[in-house]
Image (cartoon, rainbow, N blue to C red):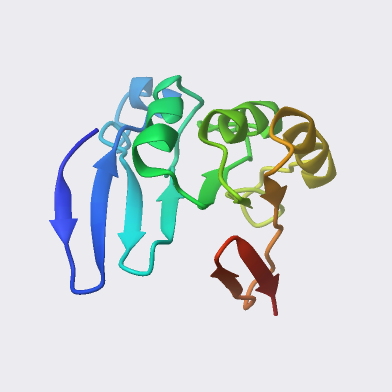
Length: 146
């Protein structure tokens, strides 16, 4: 768990991230970091960045208690669906937003399977698949997608 940056309405904490691309010669991804953004209104977002599953995610969940978690599910140099479901069970946010998957990324992911696995491993966590241009409003453990 790393450094902190204070903003007028939030604190941003740098947290550990890990992926297997760091072993690729010439890779620029050797220093990938995730972030927890704790807003003054009590909402915390955990952006895992391009990471693989790692056990310290449980500690991040305990230390920062994020309600929203943004994580990759495409499986290339990052978590796939199976690993992402386990990550959600370690952190236990209210909402998981999958990213880094789909035709544009060249990384297909079965989001229905992700939803099923997350519901099994972390029943109080909901997977919210977002489309380009959508916003998520989260207030006191509730949200809506427009």
